Image (cartoon, rainbow, N blue to C red; front, side, top):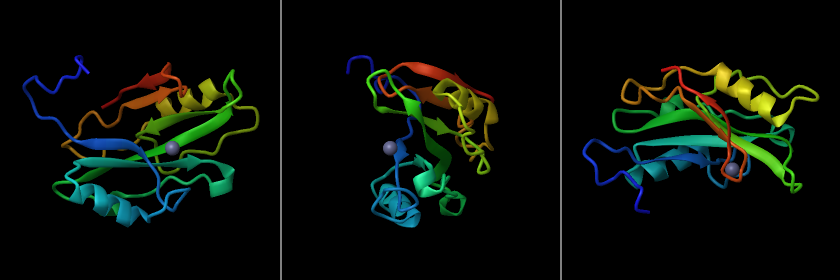
Amino acid sequence: MENLPFGRSGRFYRGNLHTHSTNSDGKHSPEEVCRMYKEEGYDFLSLSEHFMEYFGYPISDTRHLRDETFTTLIATELHQGKTKVGETWHVLAVGVPHDFARPSDGETSPEIARRAADAGGPSPSPRFPVCRAQIAWDGVGHAVGGGASG
Ligand SMILES: [Zn+2]
């Protein structure tokens, strides 16, 4: 934990980029999840629902839950293919548009990660100008795609 930047000067925002609601396999509605995080002092939250056919490929629209002290980032957790150890491969895609298309037949993990990174999305708030960055990794800590446009 010696490499954390919190001892440096500047404003740090508290947030979580990976959680779920009842729109996939979470236990609380999007409204409840955002309320709980806000009450705990978080500045931002991403509901990164499982982007799977079983759940109807949800991308939670949380824009109505934003206010002056709390914002949301539109995100999803992509699941496509298997890793070398047989686990379902998944990455978080933060900043995707609400109409991000379902995976096509045969689309590979790197291909959908690249498509998510290229899709971008609207910047959710002037307070978070870097929110158009997409972060993707393969579940074991290896970056497989990404970009920033804001
Ligand atoms: Zn998850």
